[in-house]
Image (cartoon, rainbow, N blue to C red):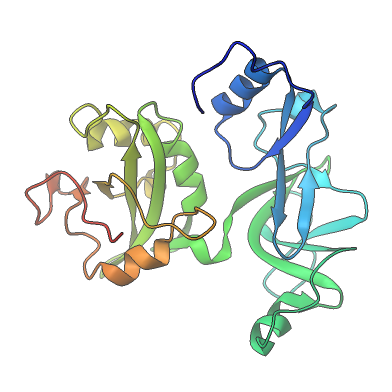
Length: 269
């Protein structure tokens, strides 16, 4: 956020809804601007689907995206389209007013995404016993290491909890033994260097928050990463432009930098 100003709280704005903010940023925004900041979830095709009411202060900072908005229904479904009970991870399906009817000239995508009035989001969620929805990851953004699935989003969230890390992107690296290994690209905050925050420090933080198989094996630093028009990190561009995702990274298993004298990964712009 930009530097604080004396008049920051002098605003008629009372509530904002956020997505994927770090917990400290949410709390800081509430204090600084004198408003309530709550998590939500939406997409271009459906608008806002889930939200945390301003009055639900007990859920603030819980990482839950909330409950369906009025005129929205939401369900968690398995790969065959069957509704799952609370506590099980599956794909979020949404229906209600104001949802797109189809994609233009994409019959295959339409058949898989628009089903009997429902929209299959492609995002993995879990619903708790109280009916609140929490995002787990993107179906297409899972890393398959041996027989276990790793949610890139989960690992990225843990990395971004560590002071000194501005943003992180976790990608799959092909591996002959495990099938895939995880690699983390790290963007440091201004003034920080890899020497200030070395790979082993990052790994030590991950060990306190993640199961051992979820800890990224490869770590690389980058000043910036390619972006989509919506400013999301364009992981597909990184993969397409990088013949060997291991090159330039620190390998925690080997305890060494791989095939690169500098401590910064080469990332396409």
